[in-house]
Image (cartoon, rainbow, N blue to C red):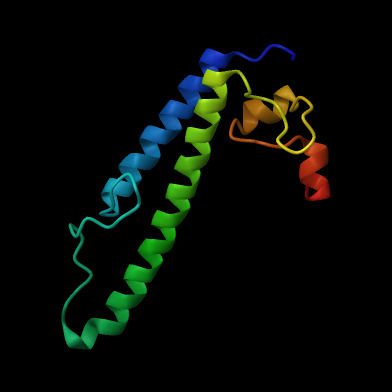
Length: 116
């Protein structure tokens, strides 16, 4: 595999993970993506529709963040066990440029383009 600065990739992933965990907390969710009840969506009957819409939007953002955290965690595990940079579809090496720009990539460009 062409040289990838694994320490730099790990630092980038850890920083991204920390940022996303902070975003979850700001949205009133814990690391598992569950709402903690610290955010008030409004209890007034007249605002019920707005509160529901806001809660739905927040839950969508929380779900996206949780998915991204899971991807970062998977990449960190791959770094630790030596499988980082191996395409999960074909077993070939993932291009270093792809990994540097998107270290959570699990497929090479060819497999991603082919939908494998």
